[in-house]
Amino acid sequence: MFIMRPQPLFSALGSLVTGLGGFWTPGYKVVLQAAAASNLYHLRKNMHYQTEDRGQPNTPEYRIYFKTTEGNFISPFHDIPLIAETKQDVDVPVKKLKMKDNEVYYNMVVEVSRWSNAKMEIATKEPLNPIKQDLKKGKLRYVANIFPHKGYIWNYGALPQTWEDPNHKDKDTKCCGDNDPIDVCDIGSQVCSPGQVIQVKVLGILALIDEGETDWKVIAINAEDPEATHLNSIEDVRKSRPGHLEATIDWFRKYKIPDGKPENQFGFNGQFKDKDFAVEIIMSTHEHWRALVQKQTNAEGIECKNITCCESPFKCSADEARDVVQSVRLDMNYKISTAFKGRLKNCNCCHVF
Image (tube, rainbow, N blue to C red; front, side, top):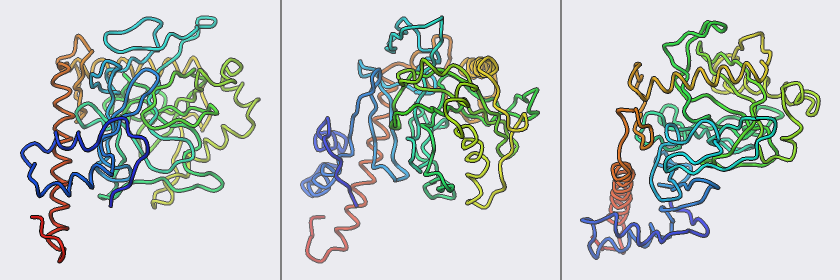
């Protein structure tokens, strides 16, 4: 079943005609018409980046790929800078933020929208690391509504160019990292979309112990939020938003219980650490990431292909990055055409094939 998506920016039909290549025969006209209606080839803009969808949302094949404004495909894990610089990095435009009192802002890749349930995440083990929906036992993963909450209670995502090394045991938590970029909870008022890249102000951090692994949760606020200038610490959040931090603890403690797992535990007795501590952890995970892309540590299955990390042996050209996404597109078109062929063979009134 294909679902119409509104206001495509590119012609899905034209894209699929090109992508099918050798599959193009008069008989596949039906396939293309149906696929065009589904708008499988979809582009939407971020403020600094573009994202390009492959497949339909809420399917295992759905992917969100990232591009620069020049149209070059990139990895949101490796090519988007950690810190929102005031200058422009190589081929990756960054917003010029007004710094106040030398405030440092970080880029956050939004994976999950506030109030939603689909567990979207950066695919760390796929080339160019698109965003996809997590699978559990072959089925799409959704987090349950933990009363009184609806889905995720913040915009949830990751800081690029960070990595929680599974071979590194934290001196405080005594647990190793979870093999992912460091997570961020944006407590700003705007509801963001998966694939957005926003700039955030770090306020503090929480040490979640998830199945024996250290899984840091950075608490931050969108730099464009009206309250961002007034919130500068965890204590500011506690004073101006009573109950918000307690709800965060409650959510992380219980969100896996509906899956039959025990309550999660926390380092530091569930106390939030301050901004300075958070920055130390962030920069530590940034150094672990640097070792990762320079092939100085065990990659643990992580895909490190990138186009901007000059000292990385995994660096590739823009053409090679495009070929990665193109191969995904061709594979998807093949699956679509095969599915329609199977349906039409079972149709008594249609003998196209």
